[in-house]
Structure formats: structure tokens, C-alpha cells
Image (cartoon, helix red, strand yellow):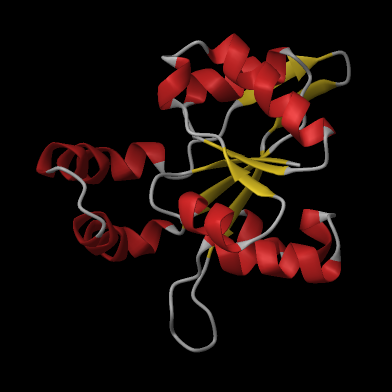
Length: 163
């Protein structure tokens, strides 16, 4: 399984916490989306849950190569929660400003593409607020997937797929 996750959703934490989950950081690939996609597919084929960046160039490459993936975004209403998260984890002021000024444009940005069956869109999941009032993380979602099975959308209600 391949998941492209937005900055700050907890990819690194999930990989440290959950066996079989790998955070494949994009930095070593230096925007070589072809190699990044190929390595992710190989790791996924080996049985890992592979967490990738959410760059639209990468997602376009995954589509071109016919690689199935999911996209996980924070809920758009959680902008200030993510600002605090970025500050707490030590991101630079420039990073935080870039994320915040592009929040409305980037959070929820879905790619559409054409294939022989027509137009399709990405499988998008929004992290929500748990019953406790805590903002959900990727680890919460992955714990649910592991408990209930790998069919991601079978455990997610329709209201979590669209905002």
C-alpha cells in the first residue's frame, strides 16, 4: 500500500511506531520522481505500507506508471492545529509561512486524469477529529487499517473522503 501524505500528518511518527510502515522521505531523491515512484512501488510490492510526500509531481508520476495509491490530507479546518504542529516540531518560519499561505490551495488538491475508462480522481482521505476532540494523525488511521484490513475505504465513511 502506498500513501502520499501531506506535511505534518505524522508520516515519520507512524513509521517509527508501526511495524511494516516505511516513511520514504523525498529529499534523497532530489525531485527524481521516476526513481522515487519506482522505489515506493518495489517496497509496497514487498508488503510494506509506504508513506510518501504529497508533491503533485510525484502523484502524477504514480498515475503515469499505473501505481495505486491513497492521499491523506489534514481536514481544511485544522489549519491552526497544523501551524502549531509545524512550530512544535521545529520547522523553519519560511516553511511554516509557505504551508500556511498555500493551505487553501494545497490541502485537498486532487489530481484528475484520463484513462481508457474515462476520467478518474485520486483516492483522498481527510484526517478528522476523534471523538475525544483530538485531531487525528496518520498513526490513528493506520492502526485502524491494520485492525480492520487493508481495504482503506471499507473502514472510512463517505464524509471522510470529501470535504
